[in-house]
Image 1 (cartoon, rainbow, N blue to C red):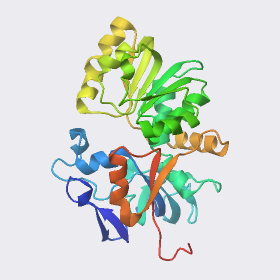
Image 2: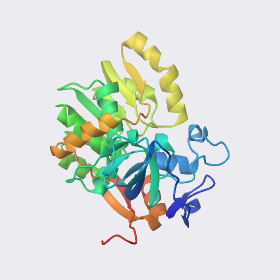
Image 3: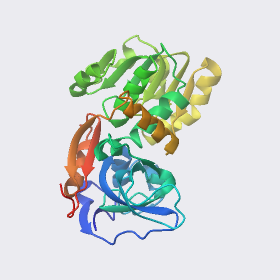
Image 4: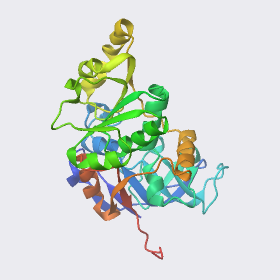
Length: 328
């Protein structure tokens, strides 16, 4: 089968399209014929080995040779212990805890990582959901305890997690301010943002506005800046960011909580099939839908990763996996 592989940390130049062995199916796994896989910031970070925490599984060279966690495809075969899925089922899921491998024509994954794809959902839409939408949901609902009428700030709102977070926050009845690049602001307004801020033109931490809940998807501003615009008893949730900001949140956050009543939390990535299925229901109701910016063929996966890593993506970036025997 064809797959995008890499054997050392670096830029997208180290990603190579190669012919590799089809993965071997274990008893509790299913073999999936991949039709679409989305690109996440985690792929970009694992590729470069930055921040350093991404190297915990492989200090000098990558532990996983094939990136790609959010996949959508069709079950080709099942292990003898699999009970929930059958060959022919169309599925999607986050396979990061199964060993990655989505940038390929086929991948094996534990059945518990996968949800059935609705017939009304394309493979590209399905691949957009597992990591980005679940992170947005868990950040707002679980860590942020979002409530109707709250003033919510989403920093980095124009990417995959951010576009889902905006829709979910509006679903809860929040007043939402979105921060991102100028070229993404019109899209965010069209999606229901109450206010948008171009971070290159305005320092949103100096505008005199304060918020009940801040979802920080970028994670490169000091938490002292966010503390300044966080209301008493408000909550700041870091979804991603530098190692320094993570340490700030871990060591300084409890002080803010104790002295000011403000909660500073880090969202740890937790793949969750129940949350996938909940988001599937929201999709079917037309309430939360993926925003897909660009699609690339598997052979151009390096371009897809570069496009996302450079911060250009408006919503999700998708890699489409074509198979020789596909009629399309």
